[in-house]
Length: 234
Image 1 (cartoon, rainbow, N blue to C red):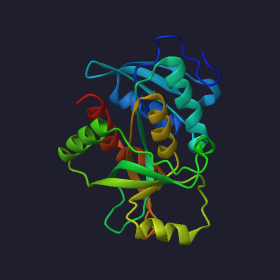
Image 2 (image 1 turned 135 degrees about the horizontal axis):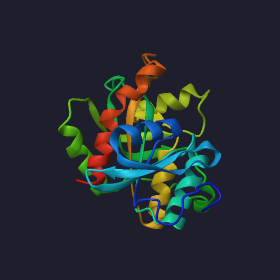
Image 3 (image 1 turned 90 degrees about the vertical axis):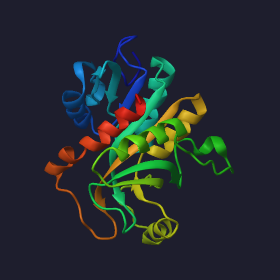
């Protein structure tokens, strides 16, 4: 057990999917895994371990934002031996060519700041996905009837952003979408020598203002989860 994860030794799989919402973790475990077992409910941040096509998988909620994700990923790696960590979550589109319900596979994650920023001091570290996971996810996505985009995303440390000028620069420089966690995930994976990827479903659009109603979001996330699983176990 750790401060934030109540699982016993051996209850966390080496492959972990990381939705931000603990109830999305529950939904994903119930719909995509077999033989699931609740392994964490500390502070209501649910985690489940089960099997997908014979492969052992944990789906653990990570909360909102990079500071929250950093806590769970540090503990998953250092205390439970997680080797492959894939963020599955929602994002906002920042390009007209990206549509709501499309999937973004994040090659890199631009940030203003992360919990790891103080380590790098004046260095602007460039967090990137693990190439083997990235290429496997692209291959898995090509077999599905869903719009897919591969490229850079922006991991923001604020949800209610009041910097339209910054968003304009992200769009100008080809950033596909914005979310709040992947930049720190990629940084921690690099630090500990682990594999990491973010596979994201577009739930809203910063340019058009279109957004998925809350009751449609989970139903639109199936492709993302299956791509993530197929990437982890190609």
